[in-house]
Amino acid sequence: MASAILASLFHPSEVLALVQYKLAPKTKYNYSNDKARERLYYHLNMTSRSFAAVIQDLDEELKDAICLFYLVLRGLDTIEDDMTIDLETKIPYLKTFHEIIYQKGWTFTKNGPNEKDRQLLVEFDVIIEGFLKLKPAYQTIIADITKRMGNGMAHYATAGIHVNTTADYDEYCHYVAGLVGLGLSEMFSACGFESPMVAKRKDLSNSMGLFLQKTNITRDYLEDLRDNRRFWPQEIWGLYAEKMEDLVKPENCDKAKQCLSHMVWNAMGHIKDVLEYLEMIKNPSCFKFCAIPQVMAIATLNMLHTNYKIFTHENIKIRKGETVWLMKESDSIDKVAAIFRLYAREINNKSDPLDPHFVNIGVACGEIEQICVDKYPGSTAELARLQAGVMAGTSGSIITAAVVVAGAIAFKSTFA
Ligand code: D61
Ligand code: MG
Image 1 (cartoon, protein in one colour):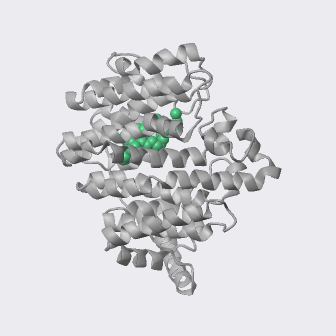
Image 2 (tube, rainbow, N blue to C red):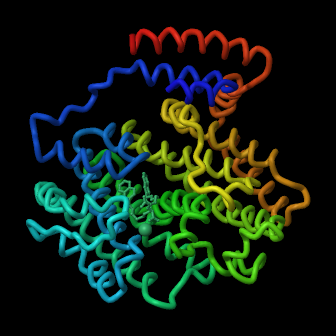
Image 3 (cartoon, rainbow, N blue to C red):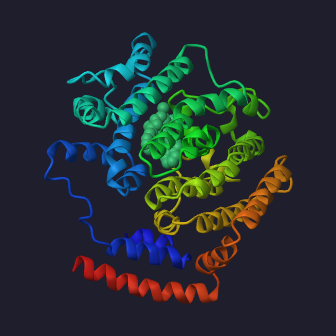
């Protein structure tokens, strides 16, 4: 907490958000009267840094269904991701996972000892038990998406098949993330929280997943390369290097930065759809659940843009204070549009005029600005309010100082 405050020192609104977050009552979720349910949420919190919080804030009607949707797909993904499992073993599991989730007592212990979510599959009988207690309508949606995702993963896991063109890149991201968007939209419409139109807009639902997944893939260049996984499409990196791993060589620094801005620009192509999707979402708990991951993604994309560190360091993340601040602010379309405008401006300001994607990125940022001005006029006042908070000028620092003192007092009273 103290180091998080320090990192946000020049962002007074983040300090405020951190202090509020720290002071908020801790015992919000209590599952101890239901041991099986407690175990499900234990696994959710163990396997997800970012999704656990937003899932647990959903309305009761959808909470368990979406928690299990997550856990089932995380289980499938833990088989996909494990490079120590040979393909003859892996592919049948991926293809039949949608049947496995109906087999009471099934568990899986073939993951390598270092696979991060290994324990989830070791105790997967718990997840299956929870899945079988869901309303049949939710079970059907989860099983259908699991079937399609597992087959898509099996296709891309097959020896020799890799992400070649940008169309392949979109297709792979559709399988592993776009389909999640489709399933969630079906659930929102099925339970009556949202109009049937939400489930009908599969294009927009898909973009919700693609924007998140592409941001992760861009960020995880080094980590994926270390594990011998390549998700950057050859059609893109091939313009800048002979081999994808050559981008990390110091002599290719300029080319690597150009390739990175190409990837950033590609991901930005989904933002228009993301805003249009979020505009449809009326239920407040569904809205925050959908909006928070998206604002975290544009904040991450801003951090990646022109940042050569992604080729030299793993695990680069936005500040904890920034995350907490974004979670607090993402509760209306006007505020979310303001956040997108804020980061689009930051991205544009960082662009290098000598970069070949300077104009493309500038146009993409300008489009975001224009869409928001036209469709979400309330975002202009919200943007002014946000900018007053992120400002690091003199008055900002004075506010910071005051808030830090308040934070220190709060910190003491929490732990003394
Ligand atoms: C609204 C709200 C949340 C949304 C959404 C719309 C649309 C799509 C998504 C969430 C999915 C976004 C996935 C982005 C993060 N990428 C990964 O986790 C990768 O694995 C993909 C396959 C498993 C997907 C699991 C998932 C994720 C989020 C969910 C969900 C299921 C179900 C409900 C709600 C949110 C990535 O995994 C990294 C890792 O192993 O930690 C990978 O392997 O590429
Ligand atoms: Mg995966």
